[in-house]
Length: 336
Image (cartoon, rainbow, N blue to C red; front, side, top):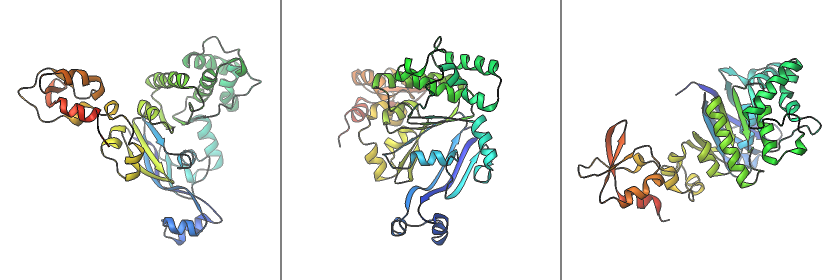
């Protein structure tokens, strides 16, 4: 595992009259009842997680669960009430305003649900804007903007204005603008939620293509589990400001840490998530045919269900187990 790029330890964000004093009076960990009685709103409660270099961590939860607030604490767009936030080993809560401005200008890229493009600027001028803020000369920033425009699939549209683009194309401009400074970390807050389903799928494909090229460290907010499954290395599920569980999609489905996580993931199609080696049993000498251990169950279901008996499971050229039609059927047709 790569080194953590972002570290959050016991992060709190309370809204109310004097949240720091309130937390201190309750030993830094007030109960839900105490928070309510004190008239405070717990946007983030005792949140801890690490985001490793090159990893995509998706934050999920219902509206008001604390996803966006946690991301804003990570980037210090808002100050946490308590806790510890590190970026590349630097304590962000101890950083000066000037240091934070430099970090955001040079190392953080941000994309939000609403594109916030400048209507009076062309695509190229929108993309180049962060470089203009940095004081980069016009020729250099224009050349960089054209590179980015090609990268996000908008070749030839540098002179267009936002009003001349579709919603998906406008979102590409927003993504391009966030990439102009070549950020170390990319924060995306429901960037595709305003798009039609077909365009949204297209943008997810584009996002994955970009990540395969750029290998960014990414924190991505969504309320759509299908989107999270497609994009995430790990998923954090938040509820009332608390990180209920952080793990792979498969871990959340097969081993939910709380009743809330179990309910949240209840309707997710297991066959699209579960891998063969999660379901397999011991190797069987009578097994016939073979499937890859890391294959999704849905992709091998037909082969296993039609096999006369167990099927060998192979990883790195070795037989590591066997999977049966009954195991696949249980995954496909699991009852409540």
